[in-house]
Length: 466
Image 1: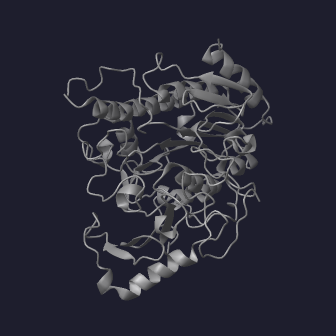
Image 2: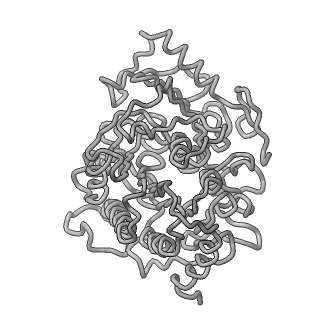
Image 3: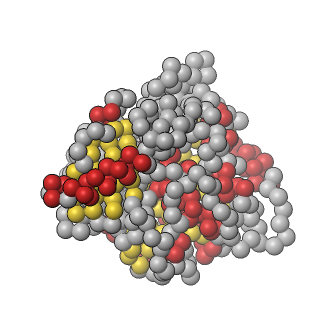
């Protein structure tokens, strides 16, 4: 039998945290708490219009901070979206543009790994003097290669749910969480916790208690809710009086319980006296899902937006995004800033007082947080590989101010929508804007990097594990 969670985590943390360089004066760099939900739709929080699912903690966080209305995931699916966040590279030239692997050693759950020469958020911030930790779903690796796991990609402390299986080695198990590579492991017991995110929050609280208070921390919480495969919820009472189908009751419960876990983390930081000097970011990796019997329209999960997970229409990529930073962000701010997943790297670099890696094509939104004008942005663009390698399986999208282009298939004609008066992307106006269509098609072509994973067009060749 495994020892208790607290005992195991304490032993690893003692090594991880005490190994940090000693500083006699507390750093003036802020802590960074990054909270990433899994498949949470734009309309699934109260502060974004949800009327049935309660999310009091996140609603209050938005009330006390800034709520973004036009923020985007880097991709409409788990792995490629996380790659954009972790490397600061938009999905048009990201190494990972889909969830499926294409090499014999990759199993169904394995994604093409980030390249060794791609700097991660963990590597960047550790180099800037931060204590770095990652807890939860990584999904950016070749499952059999520990060099591609979070602990070996810049995170001093990593508790990783592993999605792969290796012959004679690691077996796929959603309950198993590996500590610092394979140094140790803890098993999620669904009979002890309301949800997996409660289990992970316990680990995070233990971590925070052991950190060196003189050194800023970067904690990346990669939550599980409300992903369809978070199937078991021990709490049977939550929303039981609503008469909803059980699948929908569980879906709503996952979101409310996630909200509760965010509250627990914020309370811990407040007790530690660290909340005032912590930038808190909450967002989602993509739009809402409609999997394993869940109907995304039951709770109006994407509001008026068209599409959902795996779509480059707004419903698949526009996500809730909230930031809180006491004394820095004006409470109650609502921003129409058009941000995206690649913006976190340059934003966090500016916080740390360093230059961002040259690889990033994101834009720091620190000015937005501080109530100033952001650096002008010419466009945003996306590329997503839904299934297979055929060009028809690649989706591309681009946004220029309030004009949005989408095409399903690299050689198909670009659809165009005016988001200012057609947020649901219902009226394709491409025929009346031929010059804009041409400009958008040129952008997605120019921004598309060639690689042996994605061998169609582009300019920069990327070799596997280069």
